[in-house]
Image (cartoon, rainbow, N blue to C red; front, side, top):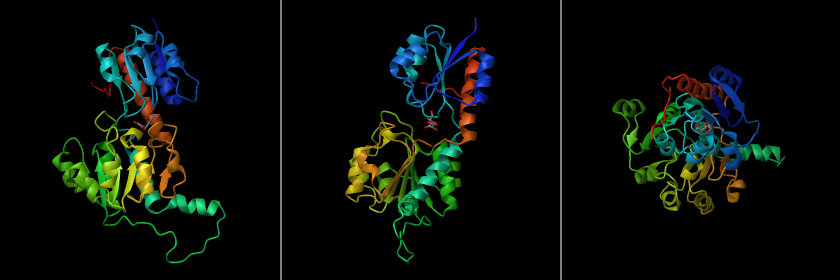
Length: 321
Ligand code: 8YV
């Protein structure tokens, strides 16, 4: 019997080609996430589900798919949208796409660091609004990065890639996380392990690269923001709920930190309205991995995971509960 592979949104042709060899592809043409009810209906009878950001794939979705479901391939490194224990309990393999999006996401994080510290959005808005301006030595001054401290929360693959970029800009690296990085990673990056509080108190730029888990939800709350330096910047390219967005708006209004660069939001696509008109905030719509090369590689890796599991092989990049 041919396997049905339910793909919840557009994916590149290169990945569709891989999937087509493994089964019959059922592709949602919606340019938005399916609603929970639509998703339950869409996956009915599927042997594999290719899902992505904002698809909530849990036990109910697995039950709606039925007994044929063998694999859920999430086209993302983050898998907070998938209830991995519930699926594992039903014998379903879950995979993600680590590695292939590391550099693109680190580039975007560094782009946000530069954009917010050098006030690029502000300058661009000024010109586009035809506001008269003239050069003087104090005009739109930002903060330099040389000799400043970058605090990385979560020194995994993406955190390390951001640190490598920061070294090229003359920054010092400190980091925090659930555990210490390997000695050679610390040595190569000159990275010093600090407690979360020490990191927040000493960093000029704090960049978040931890996964969203119950422990990291609202990791950056009002207290955390209060412990940051008044001249510091917060960068978030991981998951919105790691930051308490209303508390961030409060902190920016109170001048507790200097600015923020955000690619992710607590309730995407909504954004806390008080952030929208702040000049010292740079906002991008979840673009971390959004390059042609990276999105293609992510989708192909997800497809290869599906093909391997459906043909009786091992998954390439499995998420274990
Ligand atoms: C993805 C991401 O593009 O991989 C992740 O975890 O956040 C992004 O790189 C997005 O999640 C698409 O599913």
